[in-house]
Image (cartoon, rainbow, N blue to C red; front, top):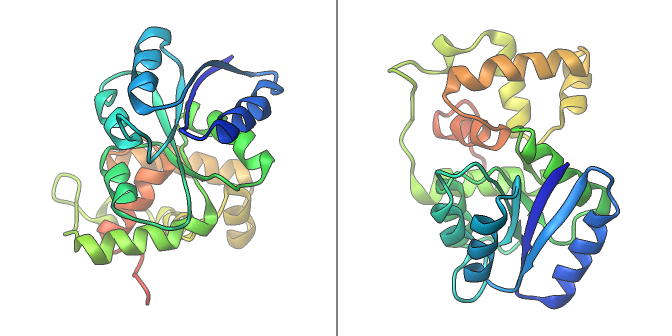
Length: 219
C-alpha cells in the first residue's frame, strides 16, 4: 500500500485529489493539509511513502517542506501550474521526484504516486522541455559530470539515445516504439543508467542530461 500525504491551500483541489486517489486499491491518503507547516507535521508524524505538495502554500511552501524532509525516506511529488517561476527551479534543486500539473488527466494523477514511490519519478510531458530549457538558460548551469566523466564515457550509445528521448518527455512505451525495442528493454537500460549518473529518478536523469548538454536547449 502506498501511503500519501496531500497538501494544497485550495480546499477544492485537496478534496478532488483525495477523492481521486482514495478509490485506488493500492493507494491510501493518510493525511491532508491546508498549508506547508501542517504538511510537514503530518509527514513527520505519519511517515508516508509520498508527499504530494502544492508548490505555493502559506506558512511554508512546497519547496521548504521538501528541503526539510530531504534526508527522510519520503518521495516528493510537486503540484504546479503552467506559469513557471522560481519555485519550480528551487524544487528541482531540492531533489523532488516529480512534477504534476493540477489539471492533468485523472489517470496521470492516480499513477504518479506509484511512479515516485517506486523510485522512477515522473514529470508531465508538457512541462519537460520548458522546465529544463529554463533551468539551463536562466541558471546557466555548468556541466555536472560524475567522477570527471561525461555522457560519452559513462553511457553506451543506446543509453544516450534513451536519455535524449527521456528528456523529450517520452514514456518508456514511447521510447521503445521510437527505438523499436520492448518497453521492458527500456526499463532495463534505465535501471542500469541511473546509478551511472549518480541519480535516483527519471526527473534527476533529465536534469543531468540538460546540465551536461546531452540534450541541446532550443528557443
